[in-house]
Amino acid sequence: MRLPKPEKLPSGNWRVRLQVGKERKSFTAATKKEALEKAKKFYAGIEMEKRIPLTVGKAIDRYIEEKGKVLSPSTIQGYKTIRKNYLQSLMNINIIDLKQSDIQVAVGDDAVDGKSPKTIRNAHGLLAAVLDLYRPEFVLKTRLPQKKKYTARIPGEEEMQKILAALKGDPYELPILLAIWLGLRMSEVRGLRYRDICDGRVHIHTAIVTGPDGDVEKGTKTVAGDRWIKLPEEIEQLIDKDKVEAKSDEFIVKAAHNTIYKNFIRICEVAGVKPCRFHDLRHFAASESLALGVPDKYSMKRMGHQTDNMLKTVYQHTLTTKEDEFSDLIDKKMRELYNSGHESGHE
Image (cartoon, rainbow, N blue to C red; front, side, top):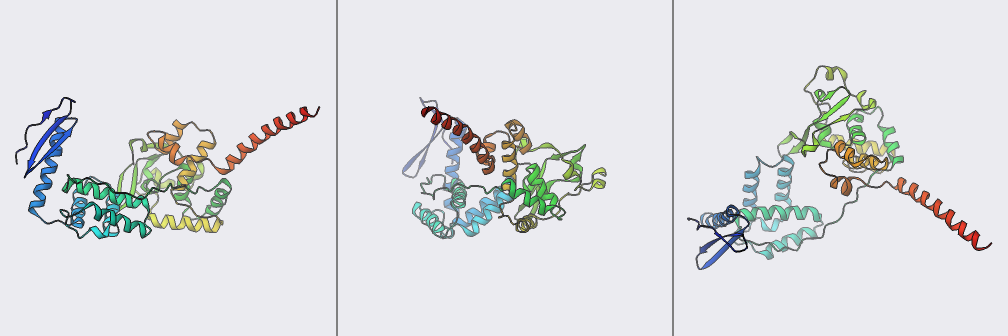
């Protein structure tokens, strides 16, 4: 099918009109190219419907296969998990016959099963991307479960002292200390090589993530994630200096993701501290910087963030001990004012 020439509207937008059977479709966008792309995608979907019967499950499989080269391994792994465990009542429905009511029921079933609102929303997002490719005219109007705000359980300073005491001399001291002290992500801890150590500093520029086919090495999450951090003596002493001097390509931490996490939980149990997520150690590092009054621009560089939005909205939690200290400071001042006024009133 030859697409008609785009026309410019008085609003400044561009429009392409298609005649599909007895129905006329209009595609409007800010640019001529975008309007044509919308029309092409719609036509591609119509042609797809004519050629092959495609179930929702098979459409998701094809989407994952097509995106495999451009998406991160962890994202692909997440998509495959969704394909296997979420929206299961849709998987055998022909994508041509899929209705909004089918989607609403599937979302409801997952919610009743106790699946997290966040993952249900991710599953719905994947479905939306698939429909945009194979049914571009389909307009989703699904009522999704309300998001639940995650509150990180960050160990307090007293708890962290117990964890650090239990950690000393342990075979997993180095990877856990890298997260607590330097605020590194698990993937960044696992991506460090001996050659990344130079002149008392460590270069964070690679990460190891787990994909559907095992571990994959990739770059940092953002451009700002590529950074240098000064190494404290305590961590330097835990690193094999002979391998650093030889500029070895070996990874400093060779343990798997799950192995490191399980041993972190073990350390917490030895310390008598309620476990938290491994990633919450990064939250602790950011919160300590905040409590110490470290300017945001330095914390951003150290944590590998391009803006302070993530630092302020996610990572920097006010520690309860610091809250109490400031409360005591305020109480002391207010008590002085209160008592002074009270005494003056009785003179």
